[in-house]
Image (cartoon, rainbow, N blue to C red; front, side):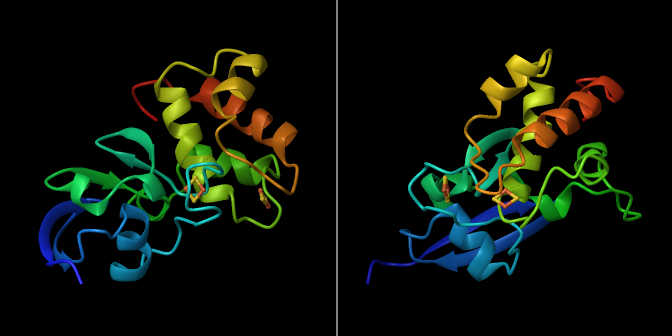
Length: 162
Ligand code: FES
Ligand code: FES
């Protein structure tokens, strides 16, 4: 087995020191070491987007990111987007309102991607939303509702406040 490494990182505003095999991905660090199972594994090879999280505020595929790459960085997962009082993030609320999920397995990744999509300024039209959300696959076919949810959340929030 490869020699263990110790990492320092911040996840959802909480600091962690973790010792692990250097081959562990950020996705498996979250799910198996930190018990944050909201981030999902649909493929483990960068093709589905179910594992999307934010690294220093930008969306990344955590299955293609080694945990080691998160050293001294800030990770945000679906568990960290609601307010400290439990109030849903506007994008979460909008997904609920528009029925933008069915089984829910792609949903954490969709929501993390949607928050970043709005922040990037890529939610200006339905076509743009479809294009910039195309890295997240939904086998339940919730796409039309996802577009509605992202459109409304983008209209309600400013880019800085998402
Ligand atoms: S699990 Fe990462 S893209 Fe599918
Ligand atoms: S809600 Fe089931 S895969 Fe998207």
